[in-house]
Length: 105
Image 1: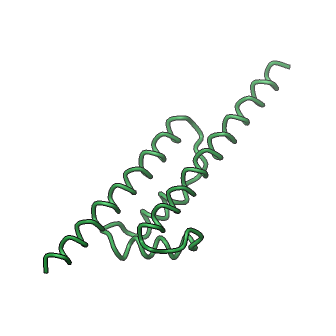
Image 2 (image 1 turned 90 degrees about the horizontal axis):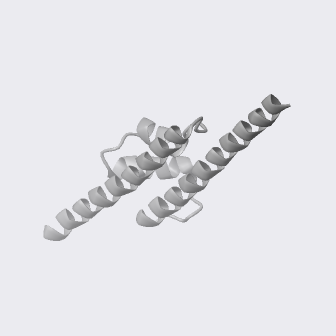
C-alpha cells in the first residue's frame, strides 16, 4: 500500500541520516585525535577526556556532541554537524592559543 511505501521511505531516510552523522562523527574524532597527537583509533572516552583537559569544553558536552542520538530530521542532522564543526574550530583555536602562550614564555 501507499502507507507502507511511505513508511519504508521514511525509515530509509532515518537510516541514511544516522549513517551520515556517524561517518561525520568518526571523521571528526579522527581529526581531533590527530590534533592531540593521539592514534586515530583512540577510544572515544579517552579522546573526550583529553579534549576536556585541554579546552574549556566539559566532558558532558563533548559526550553529547560525539555520541548524539540518531537524528530524526534533516534539521537535527544539520544541528549535529554544525556542532561538530564548531567543536573542531574550538579545539583548534584553544590549542593554538595555548601553544602560542607557551611559545611566548
